[in-house]
Image 1: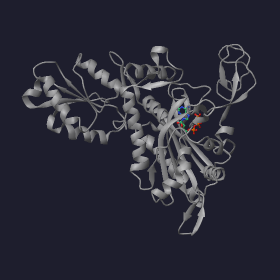
Image 2: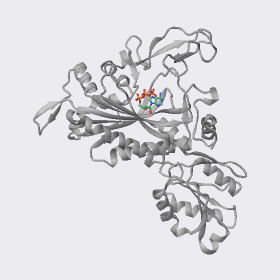
Image 3: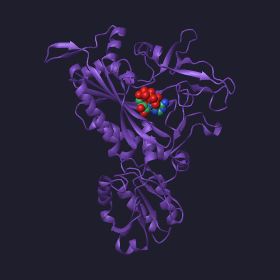
Image 4: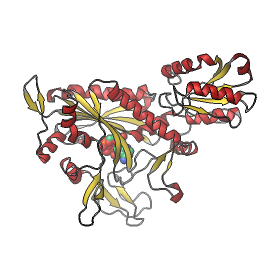
Length: 443
Ligand code: ATP
């Protein structure tokens, strides 16, 4: 394994080399902290979203989905407290003019600017929301905000969703979508960016039940990462202390991952009480209470909120899967869980003659309806295996001279590099079985 200090650079470089993730607008020199997902990255990201959606929505009876607009009524952000309170203290370096978060790790406990040694200005507050003008006629436009979180889209729609889907407490509304924050110090690749994606669930419960729903959600979310292959020794729960809790939250636990740059938040699970619904009820003047037909009374539900980042999860899965094996040359391999791997199986004709490409294409046709398949006829077979190791592809199938005689192929395993001969008829069920039975190497 590479030392942790160089690991993030290696991941960034692999992502670029293999078309996972690269700087945005690169032909113009890139845009600070903006990243684009290429062919493999977009599949990995879809698989992460899909795994979250499946476990949070599809596999449960008590959660439904929502896709709210990014641009919302500005009053939403007034009521939620984002206009007055969503701000970070900012300091400027008088010498190099760079900006830092006053409570960020670069500045905390230091008087000088860490980059150039210049003096820092006093801290002033800086709102993290992006604003833009809506409308086309000058003087008649209004300021709207790009949402800094997806959660508010759920709160303002909760009554409509509850009524139309005829939901009874406890129930959840889940949403995946883009969020925007004008972060003062973005960085560490896709860990902190100004445009990112969130996967959020608001789980509405009877007020007196809120405490007992909190821990199960923490465990559920923690286990989700483990089931998708994250090393248990790099994942931990960190309950917030009293002083750290937002004033409206009665409990909050972060799921933290040990990134190459240290332990950091991957997801937060909070018991938000009725804070958000109360604020929107006061501000909109609309009744947002729920009628409990057992107790024959109305009340505002309380809310448990697991809030995760798609991009931060992608980085976690990449960092955890990245491995280097010493040998004649270093083998770089992404040991992604097969459910997340962008390509499940690569198919190679050993050489481009003797009917091998045709037979390989036939096999591709059989496998493609069931899983993401990649056909590659170019270059030495060893090189093709290495490319797939870097792409995180769990299985490779090679058609060779023997295939014409007995209809067997070589099935090669990414993690063990073991190769075995297998009849083409068994290929699909065997690969499917191994995908579902996959375990982290060494487990
Ligand atoms: P941080 O302390 O890292 O700024 P936060 O506590 O402000 O995060 P939340 O508001 O709780 O984050 O957002 C929930 C999740 O959304 C985070 O756990 C993270 O996965 C993701 N997230 C938040 N901000 C960003 C960002 N700028 N870039 C990428 N992901 C983010």
